Image 1 (cartoon, rainbow, N blue to C red):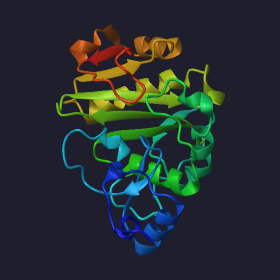
Image 2: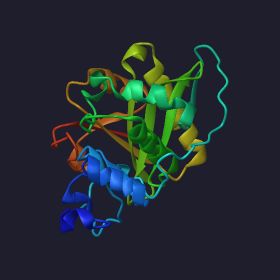
Image 3: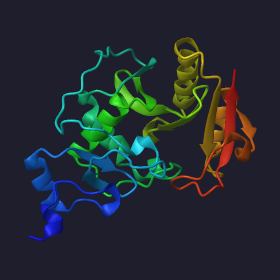
Length: 242
C-alpha cells in the first residue's frame, strides 16, 4: 500500500476515491462527500478558498445510511404538493435521476452511476443544506419533479432551478411547481426580491414556463450569472422581481 492510500484525508480535488479507498474510508468512519463535478466520492473537507464549485456540490458530515425523516404524505389524485425528499422516495429518486433525457438541459453532467448510497447522500444534501431550499413536487404522493433555490452573497437575491421527470412533462406540473414555490417563498422569505434563472438556448419549454410564471428575459451580464457547469456563458438569463 502506498503512502498516498494510507492518508486519512486528502484534498477534494486530489481525485475521487477508488473502490478500495472508498471501502477503507467507510470502514474507518471517515466523513465523505459526493462530488457531482468529479462524479464520485471524496473526503469531506471545508473549502480553503472561494474558488471551489457551488455549495450544492457539498454534503457536510452525514452518516451514509441516515434515515431521513419527513412529514407523511397523503395521496390526493392530481393534486400537486411541495414537500422535502424523504427516505421512502429513494427508489423513485433513483429512477427519475437515472433517465438520460433529464440531464439534457441541466447544468451538471449525469453521474456515471447512481447507487443507493449515492442517491441517499444526494437526498441528504437537498434536505439538510443551508445554502439552498429544495422541494420535491409530488402528485398522488409520488415525486414528479424538483425545484431548488440557491442563496447567494446578496440576501435579497437567489437563483432558481428545476426539473420534471420525462413521464410527467406536458401536463402543466412544471408551471404549477414553480408558481406554487414562488407564492410560498413570497410569504416565508419576503426579503428575497430578485430571483434569477438560466436556461439552455434550446430549452424552449423552460423559457415558456418562466415567462408564464412572471420571469422576464434579461442580459445575463446584468444578473451576475457567472459560467458554471455546462453553462459556458451562452445560456439565457431570466429574472423575477417583486
